[in-house]
Image (cartoon, rainbow, N blue to C red; front, side, top):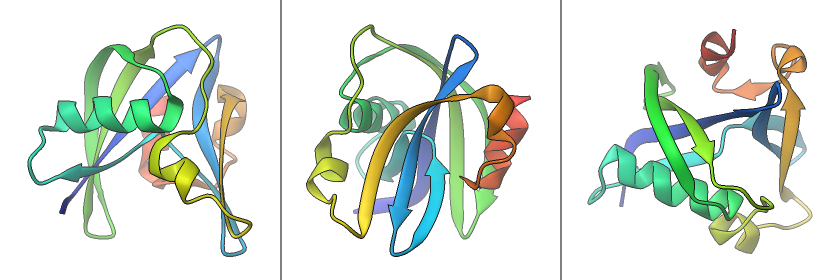
Length: 128
């Protein structure tokens, strides 16, 4: 069972941020790697699990940056550093991919982030 809390990993390298480009039911948007916190997990455990599932890489370190409320969810944002390797979608995101539900990991220039349809919008405050 999931709580109303969601963790998000802000992963920046070489002036680029790692985002998941989503195409779902005709909509296009971007999200941070991360996701829902399970009832039996800490925020840190959820962050480590979600980042591993969505990037196939382990976290080396992470630091809490802040929180925001959006659509009855509490979003908790972390500055993260990933282990070296090739990132690729895994876990439930890979299993749930279809023609109407696409997940693509992309490194996006920080200069372009403010113009993206990034969910939740409040994360942009931590990217300036």
